[in-house]
Each structure stands twice: as C-alpha cells, then as structure tokens.
Image (tube, rainbow, N blue to C red; front, side, top):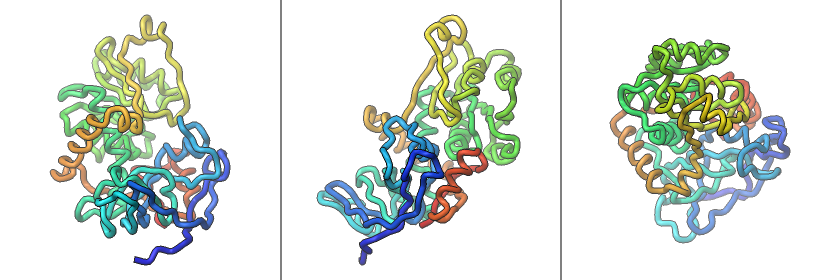
Length: 328
C-alpha cells in the first residue's frame, strides 16, 4: 500500500477558537511502537475540539497543533509490537491530530467499525456513547427514575436519551426549541426549552415538586444553578460531564444549606486511565448494545475538511443536531 509523504491537515495556529484553524500541508506521521496509522475517512467534531481551540481544555496543547480528537478510517501501517488491528482493518479511535488525511492512534484504543457501518456512522462510538453510558452508570440510574439531560440534541445528549430510555428511565430532555422534534424522535418523555429562565420550576412541576433523580449536566454557565435546583434533595445525583456554556461554581455552603445533592465529576480520559476495568465493562456493554441494535448507525452532518472552522463555529453557536463529521 502506497502512503504519500504529505497530507492536508487542519492546524490550530492560535487559541482564537475556530478562527485559528488553517488548512496546511504537513508530512504524513509515522506510527511508533504500539501505534497504527489510519487513512482518515471521517473525523468527528466534538466540544473538546472547541475547548482545545480556545485553550480551555484541561490539558490543552499550545499552537501550532493538528486539531481533532476522533477519527475513523482504514489502518494503513502499524508500529512495532502491533499485531492487531492489521493493515486493511476499518477502525475508529480517539487521539490527537484527527483533522487530517492521516492520523496516528494507539493500537489498543482502536475499535473495529461495526460490520455494515460506514466510517462516518461509527463516529461517536469511542467518545459520545461511552461518555453517555459512563455518566448514567456513575449516576446509578435505575429503571423508573427520572433523568434530566441537557443538550439532548447533541451527539452525547442523544446517546444519553437513547440509553436512559433503554434502562427504563423517564427522560426530561433540554434543547433549543428548533431541535425539539429531533429529541422527541429519540423517545424523550418531555422536552423543555433550553432558554427557559424557569427551567428548574418546569422540572419540579413535571416531578411533583421532587426534582430529577439524576441530572446529566453538560452545559455549565448559567444553566448550572438550574440543574442543582432541579435535582431531588439528598438522594439526587448530578454528573458533570462538560462545561460548554462556561464555568460555574458551587461551595460547601451551597451543598450543606442550599443544594443537598450528590455531585460527581466526569472526564472520559481520566476514566480510561484511572478505572480501566470500569471502562472495559462500559465498552463491553456498548458492544452488546450495538449487536442487539439498541445503538444503530446514524447519519452525521458532513463538512469538507477545508470547512472545519465552519463546523466548529456551527457547533459553538448550537446550530447543529447530532454528530458532525469532517470528510478529508
């Protein structure tokens, strides 16, 4: 298999967000020991990409760097010590440098694209779906409980709605009004307006004044207080999975005297490193859900690689629904 020496890639040249992306030509990377090189067929666009583009991600690299953190495609070369996946395998993996025609990823992190799925359809299987399932698991969601899911029209939110319904929960979803139809199609029981200033009151009304048993808090910013106020006292859990709307603070005074809830912080990368056995269980459960058809292939909104800045900008403006893909 002939591998070119140069490739097109989207390089982040400043921490000015999407405006700091530039399409450049760079050498094709070479896989080191334990790594594989994939020819990227589709790259996923995620909020982590926005955080890295603005330097707000916990371990944000300094420019210039090749953007992107999720890629699917064909293995075209392997580093030393790699038996599988072999060249020719179709895989999806998370790792830096995905917004390019070629990307290097750890062989151990590469997941086979399910049979019959395209690369674009597989996007989300290593970031959005594991995040949603892990958040529900850490939040101890049980059948019959009520879960409040923010950003329910996004890739992770959609996954969380699907998985929560599969577990027998009652789902209160939050999304912009223009996206309510898409959220209802995912079988949410109730859909609330993300811009409703009385969001907590609406949740309390739907739950008889008790609040949600579990809240998946991914927006942060001004909505964080509403999430806390909408959570059931004492037994209610809040799993913080993101901060797309900005940072928000809570004090020990708040937890004792104002919001008596159980707080859980979540980061997928830390879960993989610090609790690999739990992560393995989650991925095993995902494999079963794929095999049974609970997780089905979905169409991603596709952008050309050269339009990566526009894709990130659309995501930042909350103008998108579901998964976004860059096609080299």
